[in-house]
Image 1 (tube, rainbow, N blue to C red):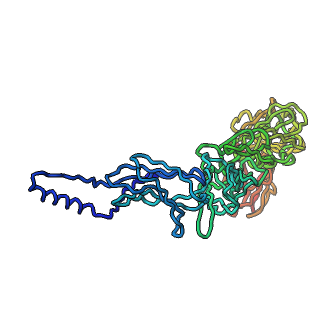
Image 2: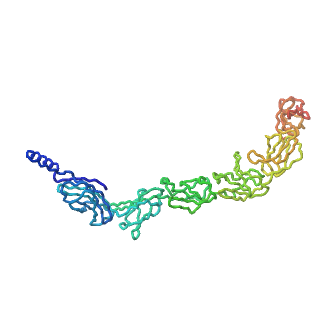
Image 3: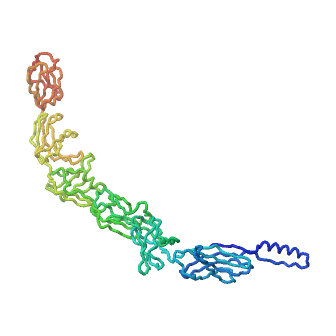
Length: 574
């Protein structure tokens, strides 16, 4: 308390003395001898340095006397008393001969200082002409030494301090306004050498600094003194759920997000073998490529390293869900899962797993055509294999199996067929699979046939003519087809016009035309008038006699490959 005090109060007005001396000098100016008397009118000055409470029985008072004038000092010293009008002051006289400079006085009060009470003191100098007094200063005695260092604690923990707490009892409380805690009870051990109190468990923060203050309330007074500064450390609570899909997020609680001051990175999450900066919500897919579907989680806060007892599990598809649409496949085939959403539910953002066909791997395949999740197998030998999934998150073994068989088919002796005739091939065709038939003469044309009972049947299309060579294969993904190394030779015969029935009719009557592949003719005529029949089969078409055909006998004809073929009989219209 370095406060400067300079205060003068005189019983005799000093300016009047100066005027009288001046007049006296004038009156005496007529004499032969002049006498001049000088008086120092500069006031005494001093300021109080402060007070140092050593203990409840001893106080060190300090004042610096800056200037002393010619006034006669009658007394000087200190005044000391309890605050309040009903307490009498104690004058501490130090004599009549003060010196300029620092004055230090060790004072022992008549009564021990009481904890929490306020006391007043001032310094004075009394002269024969005046009275000089400092301002009245006050202080409160606690007897406690504040803990200098900042202590780290978490919410709900008990703060324990060591020291001399003999002057306290458990009517004292701890107040922490930073967290709105006003009446925290204290506990003292039997020897009153330790003081403890418990931080509220419902206030959670990290790296927040709070000041604990010791307080005491009475009807006539209030005591308050800083006790200890605390740095709150975050305590993280584990996620409620224990099982998650890989695309989901872990949600951590336990800390108010608005009270996290993680500038030093001291609050971190432990996830598996990784330590990442704290976030209240963190996507599992953002953590990293960890191995296995189960891992421990916890946190570090700069003091503690905590691992939660229950691990977190990443959900994997049950074994029964791993089922292929095909029970049988050829090498290099594309395989599809029955549960088309399985990969997206369990492995999205985790990388696609490997489909295991026994000891062989089938890799994920995207044909960019919107087909379900598929895998492509390699040149796997014939056999029956158990299927499974292999992924860094875990292994799955399905109860289902896949039979692999090399594709082969039997070449028929050279065939002579008409348009619309059907030809059947036998071989290791898999029921329900579509096979492709490719005429070598038309590389951009492809026919398809669904297998049944290890065979496929194909109708001779009209676009072929003469001798043609076919190869047969199966799709291996996208627009790719794997063909067997075999060729089927077919001679496609021209259309024939074999008959007309009936050969007599009237307007509106139905006429049937027969012939091999006749439905593939380019045009149909009665006489020179074109008609539009409807097909019954590849070898039979029908039409109704138009009303504008004149009566009489006429030929019918068809146009095929730009060649006009005449009916073998006449049609009579009546």
